Length: 312
Image (cartoon, rainbow, N blue to C red):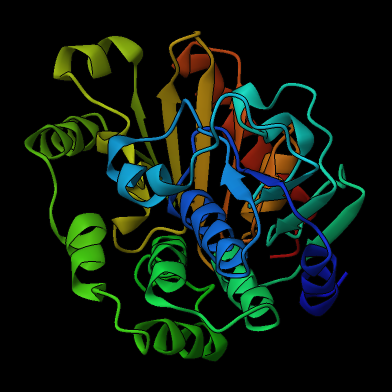
């Protein structure tokens, strides 16, 4: 369905619970908070389900909207989640009635699906909000987090003229955009800088592909938190004259989180689909069995298989 149709659906609902995905990023948290704020502006009872994987840096955006333990929703909405298995771990067997997403690899799992090819889920939510109410600072601030974090502060290829117009609309409400930029794009913890040094030291370059990896033992030694790992996937693609950045992060359960970032002409989503994952053409991911070394070889094999099917 379209954004307007999704808005019409939400207009007729009340007692709404909003979910996002595992290991949530700024788009997931910001989209959920922004939608919740808009629904409350319409005098609806709406809450966001607390996500146990959420980093501390996102708490300021999500905490005002968290559902009380005794809240029983009449309707459930998910944001920025491409498939049922990626819903936050405490979603349980909640039946999702409306899924709002911008991943074109979306696998339908809700009664109603609103999937649009935009820079971020936050950009879609803003379109829905315009059909529901007038955006206020409370609504705009988390949506600006969603928009900027998923575009790398407008540096990534998913940024369009529509994205800049959406950002201007959000800024027009009087939000403190500078504080968002400082939190997510300027300041880094000392631990994060040490982590980047570790990744650089172990960086592997195979032709136009850069591979970085980190084990759980290394993360524990550094004392790294979820916040220190935010946007780690884009680190490898910063190396000049490379086309593919592969980031391998060992998880606490021994599995390996794989993130791919690619230049135009190489479909990261298609590569990750070969490994059971998905995403966007320039940014995708999957989860593979560990250890890191085994996951690395699987990713390289998938890249080789993809390139074998793709005309040069």
